[in-house]
Length: 523
Ligand code: HXC
Image: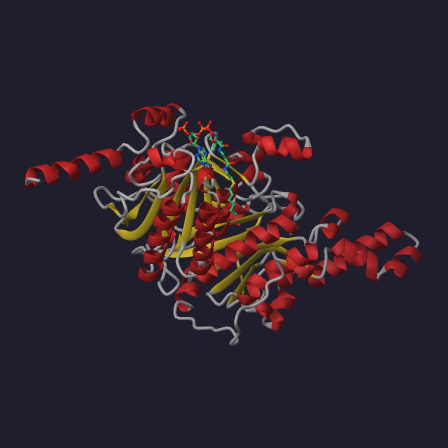
């Protein structure tokens, strides 16, 4: 064979690999409003940075006619490249090849780059578009899934793992994303379920569409399975890049720090106007967040806050932002929804976020306005005790710098849970409007002065007198400040200045947990 002929073989194979399942199937993919696996990788990575690994890999299956049907790459594009100059590993499933289904060799390719990501300490991003286990391969593909799940779990807390679901994700295809740190879904073209609508109909007699059962809307609002729901694939990839900008390469690394030049005046007077006059009126904690954090620049989320789990359990807010250039994770009660009460979903949502931040050295800012835990049979029977304990556990266990600002209410057990000094917070601020007590003044007065009120000539006036007395004594930040449970009582406009200073002071914090194999979080 001549040199030219050898080169021609390589060129032909390269061209063949680029075509995946063929021009017809690529067209069908585009018609569904979906990009191909390679187009997605191109969009995600810095121009020209992608280096492919395993481009010519083929499956080994000989059953059900597969000995006559081969595609170079076997339905997944794998490799590495950079996002804004930082190394990432990526796999992108190719729906045009056997519906992106996972064969033994397809799984081997994913495992190979997962191993490289672990050894080299860089995030791994999976772009999923798969019909699940390659049915023709039987247990070989099940084994391939298990190899991936095992690596996902080993990598958890070592390198960030991000999953985007950009098509069907059925059967085994859902469990790898579920173990990773963040799931992104694309609206209308992606879905995730363990068993599809047909099986559901057979087993439970429920009639449900794929979208209803496991679309982006369902998983971003009802189940909380997905952290981000994106309007289209481009928006999804851009949000992944934003997220990467806040997080470090691995658990030994620090989050990227943006150069920050203070203008010398960090006061934000607008913060003074957010709280309503009446302490029972709602307000949007996002306004507080926007008032505190660095303002958005081009390429960062609107207002500088990348909210995670935006439409799920929205009585609590979690997300990433920067303060003085420093990446932080924010957890905030949301008084605009259910008065910011803690319930099962909000506890689990926040606990998972806190554990991510703690795994990856991202300091935590906690904004507190919480009337307590939600009472009721629904919550008790579904385990608010165990689930609320997850939040408590996550805070107690976190060793990253932790700063709290109580804006208004911090009542009952929720005061303890929301990053109080007692469970390891480093700096605790309270606005002068804060109310820190066992419960609201009316409830408290009704209990402790029950007899006095009922025996009074005018019980209503007596109740009001006792409410005023309790409010004056306890519904303030000063009892807590006298004890040192609150380090400083501040006016809202000072918050940003104080936080920049506190996080800088804490930047070299070292705290370790007692020696153990691992803790036993109440799952
Ligand atoms: C092999 C598959 C496949 C699979 C799809 N294809 N899924 N090939 N194994 N799992 C092939 C189809 O034969 C077809 O080939 C091409 O991919 C596109 O599929 P279509 O059905 O034409 O596409 P669409 O209508 O968009 O439907 C996509 C789909 C559907 C919803 C994913 O294909 C589907 O339901 N597939 C089966 C899903 C499933 O039950 N998977 C196994 C789960 S069990 P051609 O040649 O026509 O292009 C599992 C166990 C793991 O995963 C458990 C681990 C814990």
